[in-house]
Length: 141
Image (cartoon, rainbow, N blue to C red; front, side, top):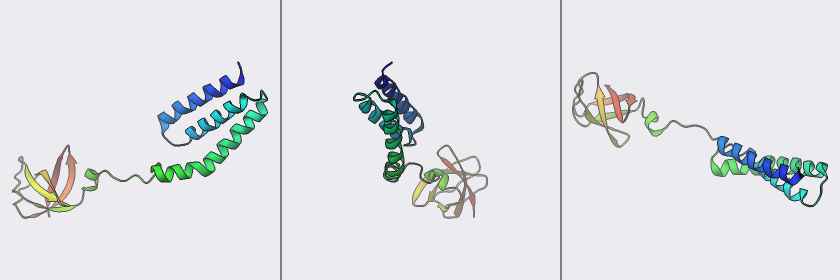
């Protein structure tokens, strides 16, 4: 098998791995494999091809990866979703809520359907205990 075939296969395998992991690492190795493929068209010397792969990989990981991570927001701090961030927040009941029934509450400026294990009158302050589907489960403060 000619060397260029090896580098072409390596390029596609690394791209597939990148699509499965999305870590902006193997795509840089795929670029290095592509560079080695181009070099293999000019020389059959495997040492030169491996050297090209190593140097391009090293430079890409050291210089390109941090740039891509910063501007593509990859591997950043995981923040709770908007809904999960509501747990523990306080708000106000817009309508009365009786056990087994739903009412409306306002939390951080948004209206939500809510349920409670105790009766809550409209205007009373509430605290979000958990979320079930698209409904808040609240307690009276």
